[in-house]
Image (cartoon, rainbow, N blue to C red):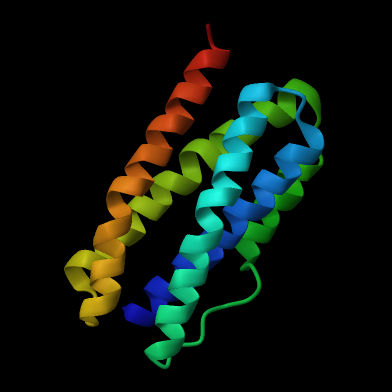
Length: 143
């Protein structure tokens, strides 16, 4: 379970950063660009902490994205304008953070390593905040 947690969390964090960089390249929407910048600024140190913790535990975190995440990035990168913005908000703002929340909660209940459980517990409120931000971003575009 701990190895699965490290893999899913690391890949999710890398995906979030890649999607945010894509948003900075493609989106003209200031709210999306601010959100993307915040995701890069906040996910980068968390990813580094996870990699350091996993390495201390003898777990090798992935350095590349899995097929699911590669497909999501490939699909979104083909879009532009409002279609890109909508897809980014749904994928990076909502879907990824809902998935991260499940991964974090599962680790707190089923993980075997106390430090990794603590890391997951610490990140649940952060992930919830990101999900709320994504929901606000999505709601703002529907007004």
